[in-house]
Picture 1: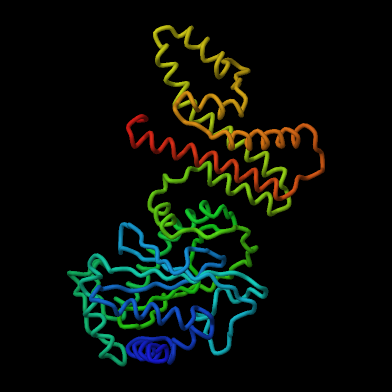
Picture 2: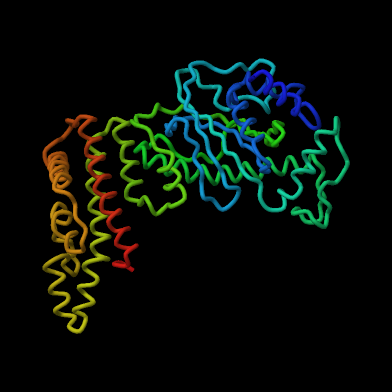
Length: 409
């Protein structure tokens, strides 16, 4: 069956405008995708009458998403459906018979390395959708460069410039590329937080990008840049991220706070051989988080309630929270903020997490006041980061519920 599908894809890609006699073989040899990727995408595109196209590209790290799951996003354009295949490559891809335009941007990796094949299927939108069938018809009937304008100048989204099937194809591929970049900025950011993996970070460009049209035709993005990709350390994240969680976190950025992202970033200190710094940073971020939330949700309302007597307000706040003047400082211990103060605004940290936090703070104090050169173990540092993230996420969830119920404005 795969042989028949590849034959159809090869036939659709040979007609019309192409940069190679057999672009399918060149892409497969250079590792831009695998046979199975092309076959699955082709079968999905052929289902139904939907006017759609699939973007292919790779990421130089591993994304573990629930196996067999496709991730549908509620997105501004194109109703994108994402699919991920995490793979490992142990040698450079075949560079023979490939042009610079088809060289693999990940092919310089000369060791066992992880990468992820990504596919995004888009439903075409806007004015490009209106001319998609005309484009497919024209390229199927053309062996060379057609002069026929499938988009007249007065209807063109490129002001005053008509589009042939060739220029429409180039424009479509570039539009899907830029939309894919936008999507992956959000997807990778959400994944990194969910998986607690700082190695995974958004890319400014998507390596080995091409598009499959509705009829199976493969379209390379014009002026494909062969920027060298640095080999990245292998991910230390464990477990698999559920596709539904990834979709929700991608669309709803408020699901994760900046504090969680900074905590995930602190894992870099562990990976670079400085677990002590990771623990110190984790406690600093927790303190920053507590100070910000409590100042807004607790201290500010107290000041407002006592606003008729500013001296009383200053006295009370100075005793329960922060002294004033040149030596202004918050008087409350970090552990007490989470153990006692959050409960005053209806947000509870479970006793188990409080006990774990006490251990992390004690370890941080030991690092700051007693340790000189000796490092804690990586496992201890990772546990500390996990505890900090769990606390922030637990409280942020409660705060979101409170907001939804109208308790917080």
